[in-house]
Image (cartoon, rainbow, N blue to C red; front, side):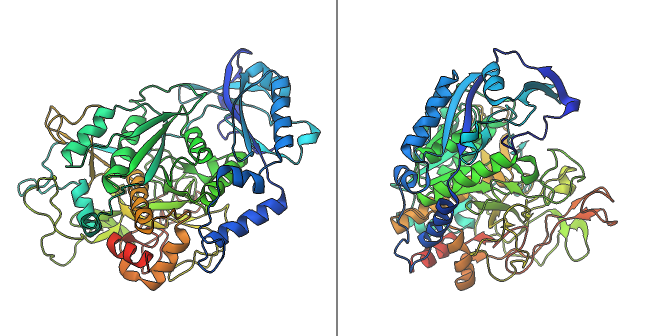
Length: 588
């Protein structure tokens, strides 16, 4: 028996009985494990690849080189694939790392071969399928099989926060402001880099998704933002069913946001959109093909909601990505310190939690801030929600837009993102302490808790969907510049914006250094200690959210979470970035 493969929603109260024997089971992944000696050698290599004093510093591997050092022997790998064929399965893809095999068959074949039981489960009115029993493999595979993926069709959902609004971009009448690519370049100090030709030229960046897109949306966004034409390359994962346009699910909004804002930051980079019916299938394919130097994913779920097998598989994949020199960026989550709560929850009942894949030590987790020229926030001093007030500041927004639709005049001070009191639901930067991963050796510095846990996020960027949100174009929403036919704007927020935007920043670093960077976290924490001017330290507000007193981690106050503070904190990480200063420090 291979334990750790039961989905949390495959429960008796949702069970609607066995599925039809003929139900197609596409692209089930049999995940294979390295030996303990191989795993130890891989972890040492990952450390050395980030150590400037090591001979292995930035000596990245191809997928085939990775396989020869850390995968199964070719003969053994082929033997397992042949055994699957002998059971009637079709092999749809194999790992260049020789650490997984994707196969397709029917529910009857799965039940017979792996002695499991495929059942239907109805959750919130939607039917899904999942295994109701742990799979069993031949004794000969006892020490080889890590687990299974895609034994169920529960998909993670987009957490994008969308706010369709009518006011102007920047107006002395309405007082509302929105972030365009030109504003982002001003606020986070990218303009000197663009002037020096550091704009992503020659770099390749991948986005993982699970819907078809309308390329016309990307073109409309770039035209409205004054960006050069630069269509993304769309890659459908071979052997997978085209998911079509997923509009009502929020996946189209998410894909457009990711592609538009990755390309807004690295405006001349080659953007590859990897598409399939499951974003983590897209993610797997991008790493297997070593498709780009940077990979962004804006989907996730709390640690507790992943099967042990799925988590182990993601560890394996992101370690391989790092060994190949790939940087992986992910959203920290949008429910504050209570990442397991469902979208729209008004209070937490399931306790503190952080988000995977952001919590993986091989991924850069991006949290959220609010540009604080207005807003209602969590006040860490009084432990209550209230209006943020500060000293009068010089103007930070212009009264009109320039030719690139920008109006930000300078860096705008920030505080931790927490719109819970505005949204009437848990809406704040994800962050906290992992319960599954120990603290990486590189995670040190002022403010980093002495908790022996992987802490997230690592860095942050603006994320509020209510206060100075980002503009996007989706589902033909942009007719006249950023405006729709009804004169509205498509405004979005969430840490979903930070993951692709930071991926764009990494593409600029790669161009500046003329090399892939792999896991950038060791360098980020090192530079936070040596070059604080590369970061904006966020010290106000927090990701505290209301909770049900007596529920897990909730005391009599009815709130739980963390406050921002000097140095690293469990809300905004190391803070936001002065990208120009960051790249200057990176290259010295």
